[in-house]
Every structure is written in structure tokens, then in C-alpha cells.
Image (cartoon, rainbow over all chains, first blue to last red; front, side, top):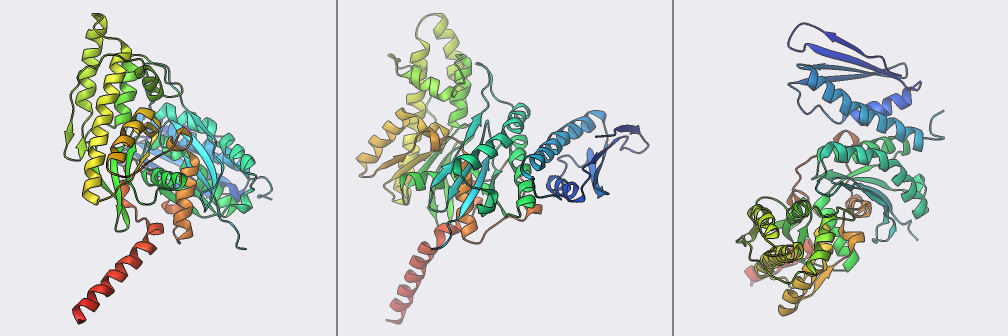
Length: 97
Length: 359
């Protein structure tokens, strides 16, 4: 479900990666986006995270100053993304058309 | 007949994840929880604890709803622990609540963990306006309600009393099942010899880290030379720590002129602590209120109940503000559900004063 690309780029935000999750539903993607957008990155000077929703998909872009920050942030995000998705699967029956 | 108000509450600030369903009168419809138990000699770390919560939270939601016999449409609000606690574990409850809130179209209420312990203790025991001793693995506070808030009269200046006990259990490599404190309590009953330990009360505050360092060093030495048994050490540690807690609680009682004590938090189910506190209370003509492990130890119902009290008084947390925070002091919360009666009294007093001025 996810496409990952780690691209070294210029500037101090040298390390980045992109995540794309296809919920095949604008409602589901928006719910996950809204739930996860509340928690800001804990070290904004080291990791940045941008999220967008389009065509029933959630797009997440991470940028970090060091690989370890990128990995930690991405890994933590995957845990809560999985949790949010499972919550929808488990308790969203009959809610989405 | 008005519809009864129902709340679903999530607690996951430490090594327990719990989901509870309660009504506004304090009836607990369901309260399942699961504890992350580490091997003897080990404590629980944020990341592993969060993984445990991730695994168990959704099955717990299902069984909480099933046991309570309620469906999502019967729920008035979704409550979660906003803090204090460990960050990653706190996030698990917050994320589930945010998703459910959007799907079920229910409001969210963020709850202070410490205040939830107090409200749960009050509703279960019927204690009206006690001095509260809140003792757990992460917190040690002596609290009393005054002017809209739960005020902290005294607290630990370093580690929590439960943390001191937990870490000593690790030195003895006692089992963490069901909890290190429980196993210390059982072993302490077999203690025969009292070993003098440092005693660190500073006004209404306490300090435990020095006692822990001392007993950690002493334990290894004295056990090696057969001068004492692990049971003696557990007994001595409990007697010393609990004597300190009783002393600061009594001091707070004298300050606020209250006669009753309520003990809440995980260490609060220790029967020796309850016994010592009961003796002190009876000497002052008051009563001790305490609960057993079902309510003392972190659980979802305490969050649901406290959140529902706030919600019934018009409070809720907008989704975009439903954050969690590792630091969240007891006295930051306005306990609006306790205000009406008190403010009537205050209004009455003001009127009296005005009358006196006129006269």
C-alpha cells in the first residue's frame, strides 16, 4: 500500500521520504489525516512532516536533517497510521458507503 | 425520565491500557484492562509499552462495549487521558479517540489522569471532601480541593513512591506480576527485623531517591553477609515509606482542617499503607477511604467518569486540540463540576459580609 522513496537533497534538510496510502475513500483518508495532524513533530528543527489528502489517498512527506531522525519519525508515524486505519476497519462498518 | 448519560473512557498513560464505560451517577458498566508485565528485574520503557497498548486497545474497546451492552449511538462522549504520563503510550488512546469521534460523531473530552483518580475514589467510596493521598508509580501528591481546583499541598521532590518500590523489586528480582508492589507487600508480611533506613520528610514534601540508593547498596551487602532476609528489607522499606506518607498527609489535614483521607493510585491498594493511615485518621476523629485494585489501579472507567462530569458541565475538547502531554499538573484543571455548591457558599458569605457592612 505504500511507496517509499528516500531522496538525499541539498539544504540542511538533506534526507526525505514520501509515503502514499490509498484508502480508496476520501472520508477515510480525511479521518486519518485529521486524527494524525493533531500531533506535531516533537523536534521541528530536526524533522518536518507534511500531509495532504487527494483522491482518497493520504500523502505524507518527511524531511530530516539526519537519517536517524527520519527513521524514528517515520517509524513512530507508521505505528499510529496503522492504529488509525485498524480503528476504521474495526469500528467503521456501515459508516462508509 | 431523562436519558442517562454514558461515556467511553480510555486510559493508557503508563503500563496499563484500559477502556471503560460509565454513567454519570458513577455506575461502571464495564472496565476491562490489560497490563504490560515485564520480566523480573526490568521496568517498562515508553516504546515497548506503546507497542503493548497498540496491540490491545481495539480488542479492549470491543469488550468494553460488549460487556456494558451499549452501542456507539448510546454514548455521549469519548474521554481519553491527556496526561500526565509517558508520551508514546498516551498517544495510543488519543489517536483511537480521534478516529472514533469522527466516525461516530461524538465529542471528545481530554482528562487529567490525577484528577480522574481522585474523582473515581470519591464516587466509589462516597468520600465528600477529603484530603487525598495520590500514590502511584509516577506520582506522589497530597491534595485537597479548594476554590475550584485540586491543590497540591505536598509532593515528592524526586521519584514517586511507587517508582521507589518498583525499582527495589527489581533489585530483589521479584516478579512484576501482577505488580512489583504487590509482591513486595506479600514478602513484607514475613519480615521480622526492622532495618533503619533514611527518613526524608521536608515540610509537606517527601524525597525517596536517597532511600532507594541507600537500600540498593545495603541490600546487596546485608543479603550477602546473611544479616537480613529480602523479607526484612521489604518490611523495612514499606514501614519507612508509608510512615513518611502518613506524616505528610496528617500535616496537610492540619493545614486545611479536614478529617477524612482518601487514598488513590496504584500504591493505594497496599493494605499496610491503608492500615497505617486508618490509625492516624481514627486518632484525629476522621475516616479513611480507600479502594481495592479494581479502582485504585489505572483504568478506563476513571477517565470516562471524570470526562463525563466535565462534559455534563459543558466542557469538551475540540478534535484539533485533543493533544496529549507528559506534564499536566493536578492543579491546572478547573474542577467545574465541584464549583456550584462551593460558589453558593461563597456568594452567601459575600452577602453576609455586605449585610455586616450595612449594619
